[in-house]
Image (tube, rainbow, N blue to C red; front, side, top):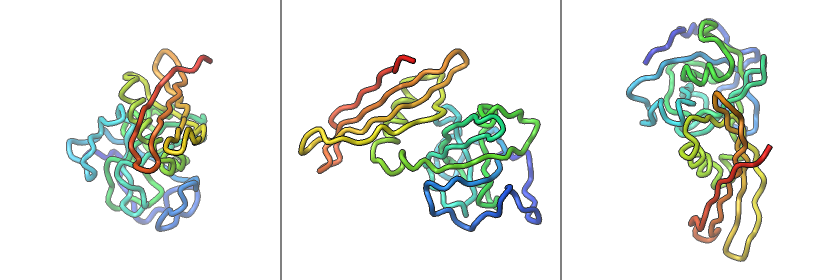
Length: 204
């Protein structure tokens, strides 16, 4: 795997001191991001090309899990991307991540800068509400050429005694436009089986 910037163990990365493990899912982590072109093999057995290359490698000490979704924000221009954890980087501090080059550029950063100050937020709604990640993956497949830059949970409602509905709005960007896609899934809370799901574009 190609890492253009080497880790210096004598230097503290990030504008704020980091803690050994991040156990608060809604905590905003002040950190830094480097970039990579990826590789053929990852520790998570998830390819760097997954999620339209919106992928990231993390420190083994970060507490993030394979397949977890992270929201990464560039505070200089407020651009955000949702990235999937696909690999780990030995000797990186917990608040430093290694983005795929495409995700790094999606934050509006020139790869020549090498290291970018970022805010990292584990996606609490997508991880805690049962089918948010399920819908996220369906939206990724259904809208090739777009990347998901933001999401909003619209909540869960009881449809009947054995049916619940979860809804989300996803913000998608392409080189030509920005659109909002609303996703909903109906499932049986007793068996966790999906009954139906729906995607629709929301008029701006």
